[in-house]
Length: 114
Length: 114
Image (cartoon, rainbow over all chains, first blue to last red; front, side, top):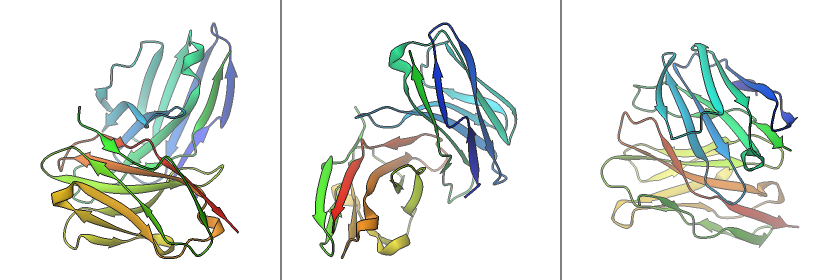
């Protein structure tokens, strides 16, 4: 399935590194999302972009910086992360303002912060 | 606090056994309900969804779920599981028609033994 793709699939970084996660959706949707999936915790919504505008920021630390240059691409820029930020980062997309809105997820980026 | 509860964190079944995974939510008003599945090494996939109408919804791979409004529940069922159903199952709730956030439960890990 190639609806929502994410790169890289795995990333190991030190606490002083700067890296970026990339997400691309091929579904023609107008909204994109970043979620964090940690062990033994529910998926946590981080950011929402609707028509390229950020509409939600769920109290995410500033060391995570999203960017949405167009409705098909979403980035998550990472800098000075902490070991507790190690998790699976999932991107999703949906077509908002429709009665049957459904979010579709990418495969995720498994991040390890050393 | 409003939440989505999945009562069973780990379930082990033999092939051909029947499955029921519980999901309760504490949100009032209009809700859209989803079950997602995450097979080992794969991304989150939509299993089924409920928006309105018949409270018994059928999804892929023989799964179904029943929305019981009075009980704030959306339990997932399958009459006869297969080894290939081994996966993590997530219940999710979207509150309101135009809200963006999907609120997830912690997930249930299902292991089906031959």
